[in-house]
Image (cartoon, rainbow, N blue to C red; front, side, top):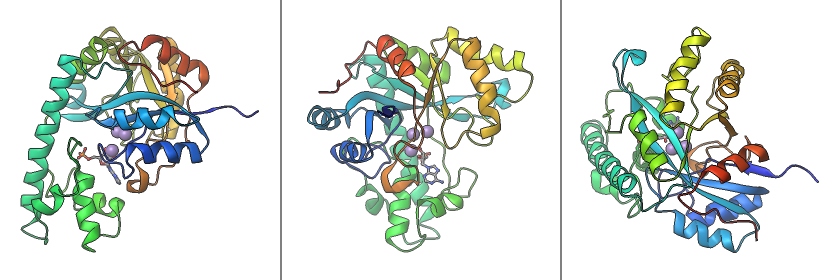
Length: 300
Ligand code: AMP
Ligand code: MN
Ligand code: MN
Ligand code: MN
């Protein structure tokens, strides 16, 4: 028998994916996935539907989140840098987590309105149109603006929208609030979850989580995060610079971090395919052992 396929990073319409949670489960089964994590940005609102669907499906489900955080210190030249933190098996009722997620979503909502305001000077687009693409309780994001731009034929797809109109360094971009990574680590641990840095080598290894420079410096930076609660790193991810993955593996090994590999599937919103990167069983077992805030749905 071939190895079970374990994919621990995916999105639904509860954030910026295109599938409903039950559709995500069906897609995962069709892709031969045996264990899937649902990790929408800044919300657990997709969990109930995903859990119900997974109970009826030949698949195990790990409830999770992908929390928006930022680093702003000497490592970033005091320029805020967006860092994504996965949190597996968090307690979805934990007050500090609930409060923080609500705060991020509310700021994201305001920020998206501000971006649409700016865009409406140059393009035929309104907040009402964008808002109509965001389900109740979902986390608003730039891909929701992209959906309207695509529907109107202004761009061909999400990738084209992000190349210019929605680019972080483009003329219409507005940043949004996110908690500091240090605080996010403590919130996820406080909620009984397992914090794992998402795609730490994306953006050409330029993030605060990148591994260029002397190894002792990189180790010191990561060791500090481990002391604050970090438990793992996502190494196999299409956005991680391939040449830096081996260094990150050395860091993970030195600090005894959990190592994951995942697709970051977004349905039709991104080219990422379910199962394109995978996590090894012994690493999944470490997550299942350490996560005490929520129950995984076992294989039935
Ligand atoms: P936001 O969170 O609103 O700043 O938007 C960023 C989100 O858009 C990320 O979670 C990505 O999943 C998605 N995204 C970023 N870049 C692209 C891209 N080039 N193509 C498609 N989706 C993207
Ligand atoms: Mn996303
Ligand atoms: Mn991410
Ligand atoms: Mn993601």
